[in-house]
Length: 270
Length: 242
Image (cartoon, rainbow over all chains, first blue to last red; front, side):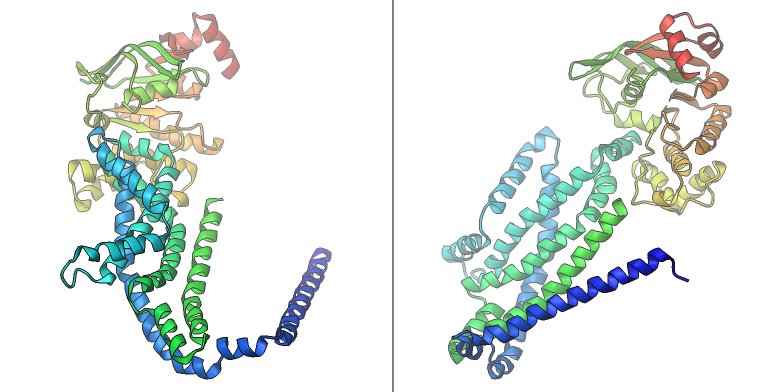
């Protein structure tokens, strides 16, 4: 037998759901009915939502996307390693190692302060310009390096914020046992810090997956470039829509997962 | 025979004088209780003994060696002096067993297999035999504090420092932690406690030191400090807490 309160809340909830569904339906209907009334709709539909072009180009786009995944796959571990190293370097307290700390600070300042595309241009065109022999003039190498340098700077800052979020008492407890400062860092502080910033780092890696497309500006024919090729070939923009769908198929689930992790962490901490 | 000896120890934090000339001798087998109001310098004194805070002036000697000399490597000293904190400070990402094994593994280079029987025995002795594979957040406050004590004991320290270790506990959990201290006392462990548990200090301490504004205002056997305090401030403090 439900209580008075439960009956009231059930009724409230049903009402709220009904209103939400009704207003959503109204907006969708308005878009579906009104947009085609726009004077240019026929042209837009032909050049952006062309089913025939979509079917013809989608397999090729998917294949080109494998290159995006490959670039992501070799960049991600290097970014994680470099980001961790820089984060640790920024936390160094030994005076003799100050130059390393200073270099780490400069590095993060510079690479967080530049647009990714600019770094890709400077490194991707600049270094092969030295006249290096094959394969050392490959845009894959230098484009990837540009992504690694930029993203490792962000990852380093995220990890450093994680290190700083670990309460000083943990360090004191580790030191009081007689552990060295480096052992305290390695076994006590870092494992907690890295766990704490997993969701934030996941968001960075989702951004990286999208920014891989920027390498197309210096040569590699990945999905964005491939879509451009199809566009020129077929005089139609539909391949770009196809490429967008492929990106979303990866990034939306990944973003949702990161949000889920972040929520779980917030709940665990409260 | 271990002797930890303080002479005229001073410490200030940004112009705030927390310790203003402490003299104290701690010898093997002794139990010393530091009592006094919050902010009287009890915790700071313990942190200085373990070299977690460098002192500004005076000396701390351990078996005749000046360990307070600037630049002195604190690690070997900390390995001989265990410390337990008010807020437990267990490592949350490790089981109770791993918390206790970390320091001996890293410092003495011992393997898990060698260490496990000895540390399991410690856990069992303090009523944690069923709990050693649990993580800190699966344990009650009293259990966590006992794990913290085991973690410090795992290094086989010669002296143990306890910084108000029952102050963060619910009243019904205080007893189980004090029982551990009683047990250590009967085993002859050298201990220095900062505590608000006056009954406990009175029952077990060899020496009670009343700290007031960074000085040891009065010290002596508990019967004297609690029974016939000489200083007006000691009397005032005791009348507030007893």
